[in-house]
Image (cartoon, rainbow, N blue to C red; front, side, top):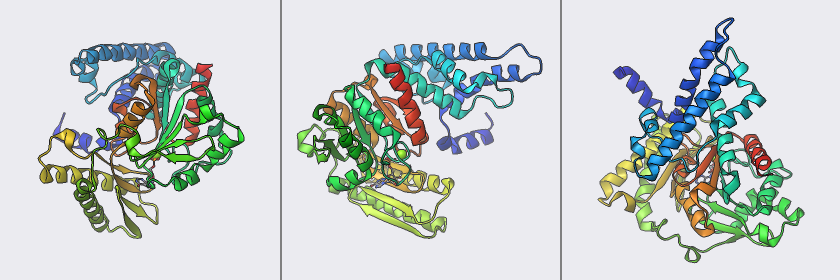
Length: 401
Ligand code: IMP
Ligand code: MG
């Protein structure tokens, strides 16, 4: 690797997913063979074989991970930083399904793309988890509704979420949006869904399986039989081990975040921007659309500034440090105290759901996103808009039937 290549690679890390890039690379050979005129090579069989090899690599990795030797797996060497697979993934079968619907292997000019691979991984994950599914957690913005909008009345997702609840699967929304302990603002944003549940006369038993966790992991609500959200005080569940911070602990972090975001505004000469401070978050909120590059710059600057602040302000061991999440929200940038890893772990504790039976669906899985943290606690599906959430839930429904 030349040093220029290395610099380029590292500076683009926030735009890449190493596993997806690796799979894309593997699929390039059959694509090139297929693309040559009159070639009889390349095509569904070759692609399938690659997905089968990937399944084997993942299974080997899982076996070694069970013995605490994940870093010795071949997959770890091929894909640095590879995480945990809580289930095996039927990638060959998932590819066959995607190929049937999207004709991937029939293409001669456009190779299998990032989005093709992302969707195949999603399908495989849904296939693998369907039999044992206990809990589905959803991100809010861009997963269930458009950025900054409310859950739409008559959204096609309403029926699907009700269907999951009626089957006995617990459903939770784990969102960065934090409005404190008052349920009214959350109810306002979710009114389309709550009204849909009321109209469907969803039973008490089913509706009580619906939860909302706001501010990444800070404010927990359960739906009651009148289709309203009810705040669950911290003392009623075991959050203390996971959420151990006090106002005093978070102040220096929020100060550092605020300073850094203001510095970004100055450095990039950003106009019409507000920097907001909440008890557990600092946000940079523009009145005009910022570019993705500007928002990524803010998120990465904040991530680094907070790590710096933590290393200079305290000598605590890593596990005692206050966890945070600095992310590009698509139209804004936020630094939150806590993260969705803790959010999912709290729900798993409260609802008794195992990692291999928990699925998080979200849109922000790059290193500047706030759904990435959940990968340490559960299985995930990476969607890019509410239509894709609908698609993945339709697949799940079909498989579960
Ligand atoms: P999520 O995609 O559901 O996690 O929501 C992320 C979005 O929530 C952000 O992009 C913001 O627009 C919005 N938001 C509102 N309040 C907060 C907050 O306190 N922290 C982070 N995001 C917030
Ligand atoms: Mg989102």
